[in-house]
Amino acid sequence: MNGLHGVIFAYGKHVGLRELSENRTPASVPFGGRYRMIDFVLSNMVNAGVRDVGVIIHGNYQSLLDHVGTGKEWDLSRMHGGLRLLPPFAMVRERGSGTFRGKMEALSSVQSYLERIRQDHVVLADSDTIINLPLQQVYADHLSSGADITAVCAAKGQGDLEGATSFVLGEGGWVQDTLYNAKDCAGLRSLDIFILSRDLLLELVEECRRKDHYSFRNAVLQNMSGRLKIRGYVWEGYAAQIRTLSEYYDRSMELLNPAIRRALFPADRPIYTKEMNLSTTYLDPDGACVNSLVADGCTVEGTVENSILFRGVSVAKGAVVKNCILMQNTSVGKGASLSNVIADKNVQITDGCTLVGNERYPIAIAKNAKI
Image (cartoon, rainbow, N blue to C red; front, side, top):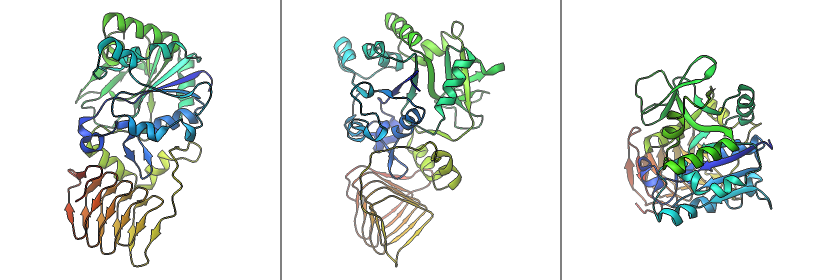
């Protein structure tokens, strides 16, 4: 899709993710046994033929740099174009240190990059949306509709509107109203994926910069609704935005449902990620693994039920792991018992340790901890 350029917002920190985002951006939070959150929207773009993608970053981005690298796994390692990581150098020169106040300020900080975009249209997307979207269909719909901006939103009933942007659509899918944090309304939740022309994007960035308007939702979607033709594209498939620890746990556990796995990982639109080439997983004949997702390089000698094990996890003899998410290289000692636990990378659970959380309030263990 030579006419579309990708821009991903991979900055900021969701306080609700607690331990999972202490040392990384939400974009690089591990998900689904072998992926990072950014893998989904980045793969959506690549699968649609997008060959130039800029990723706007700010703070705690070392983990993200280690993961995406040059973009080789997404076929975005190129001499011209491809994947570009965009630090906030322009903003630091103008305002000194500090985080972006909103998307328009983030875009303004990389305005020189935007001016060099070769394609006619740009897709803007957040990095924490778990979705497998046929982006080429959204782009075709945008071109045929004559809209200034096409906003992808979830079908009715998908997701809590509290703390989210939502759209009230009229006849033909045109946006009549843009709401925020509306608990009781007829709106559809925004999935924070937008398509617009490059020229319009540059015009909006420059106008917002002059007026010191920094929020895309307020300055553009709400304040310019009478001036711009904004149309909603309603996505009927699976989509999840992960902003809190409980959302992370719930959406991860949903992957144990085969129907949701099929929706997220169709054969014709693969989700790409960094390869590690680990050995195959070993399951001890005396152990047990029931209704779980187990990545490569794991050793399971104990009992694992309804859980997700990332690469390199080890569960020793006599250990019991139920309803847990254990990230890369976590080890569970002999006789340990875990229930409703989220363990970040390189966590060590010692022999005989017992940790029992609740499905509504899972226990979260920070990276490199020893319990």
